[in-house]
Each structure stands twice: as structure tokens, then as C-alpha cells.
Image (cartoon, rainbow, N blue to C red; front, side):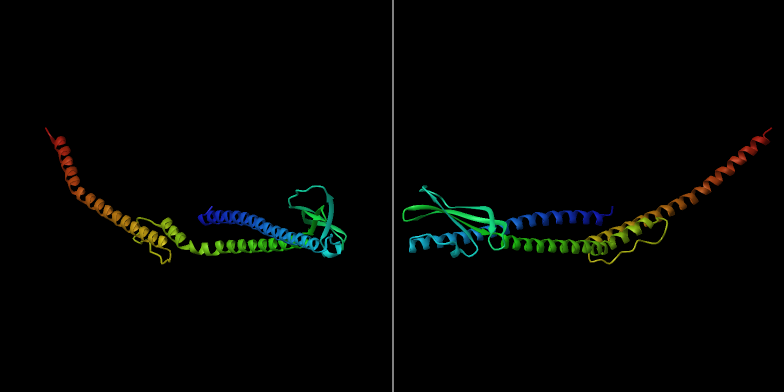
Length: 244
């Protein structure tokens, strides 16, 4: 596998991991913000109930609460802390059950305690979260496609000088007089590599030519004494044959 393929693989894995983790965190944050907003709205609704009781001395009717479902339960409890929680919401208009958010708190009417429970639908909030999540996923997919295309074409073009140098190194023959030519590149590392390879090939070729010349000269210089020695040996052999 080529270096660019390794880089593309690592880049895509890291990018997908970061985007998925970021998407999950983003979803949790949006969900938390939406829930806090619902709790704030429910708190305001309960505040309106308290104001109504203080002004009129009686409990409000369900018609006063728009689409919120409000119930009042008598209680003898004197200390009850308000709490927010998730609960099903029965939509009175569409007659279906949806996800909802509720608040329960204590209110007193003429000395009688009531647990006020206000339930509000989360459908609009969930729909908004789904839209935001869908947009985020779409942007993530587009970003990944752009990254893959960019890595495929831009990086392949970026590595062309390296592959050009590699091909020249593979074809290099020390016996040839030709040298590896330098390349023009905007990448400093490739320029340095090209210069280093060019200098190395030039030095290797020069050393080879020097060694070849030395060997030829040494061979030529050794031929004369060898010829003299050979002729002397021949003369000695001839003298032995003619010796009385």
C-alpha cells in the first residue's frame, strides 16, 4: 500500500471518529439546552398558577393553560420540592401520546395544599433536534466526501515529484554517463531529496569512472613487466632444452 493510501486511511478514520464524537456531544448539548428551555417554560407556567391563586384565591381551570395538561391533586404534605421529569403527554387535540416534560410543585389555596403537575409536549423540541441532527449528519457526509476527493487528487498530485525521483533511482545505472536530473517542486522536502539524490548519483558516477580509469591504467602498466617475465621464462626454457 502506498504512503498516500496509508495517509488517506488514517486521515479518514481519525476524521470520522472526531466527527462522530463531536456529533454525539453536539446532540447531547442541544438536547440539554432544549430540556433547560422546557424546564424554564414549565417554571413560568407554574409561576402563573401561583400568581392566579394569589390574586383569585382559587385554582385556575384547564382552559387557562393553552395546550398544557395541568392537574391538581390534594395533599397533606407541607414540604414538597419542585421537580422536573420526563413523562408521556396525552395530546387532547390529536388524541395521541407524545413525549413530554413535566413539573410538579406544591401550591396552597386557602390553607389546602395541592400538587400542581403541568405536562408540556416535547414534540416540537424533538423535531427541532432531529432537523439539527440531520443537517449535522449531512454536513458531515459532505465534509467526508470533500476530504476523500481532496486526498485522492490533491495528495496524488503532491506526491508526483517523489515518484518521479523514485523512477529515476530505479533506472539509474552507474555505468551510464547520464545523471539524475533535479526537479522543480514547491515542497522543500522534495527539493532537498532531489538535490541529495542528484549529488549522490554524480558522486557515485565520478567514483566509478575514476576506479575504472585506475583499473585500466593499472592493467596496462602491468602488461609490460608481465610480457618481459614471460619472454624471460621462454628463454630459460629454451636454454634448458639446448643445454649439453
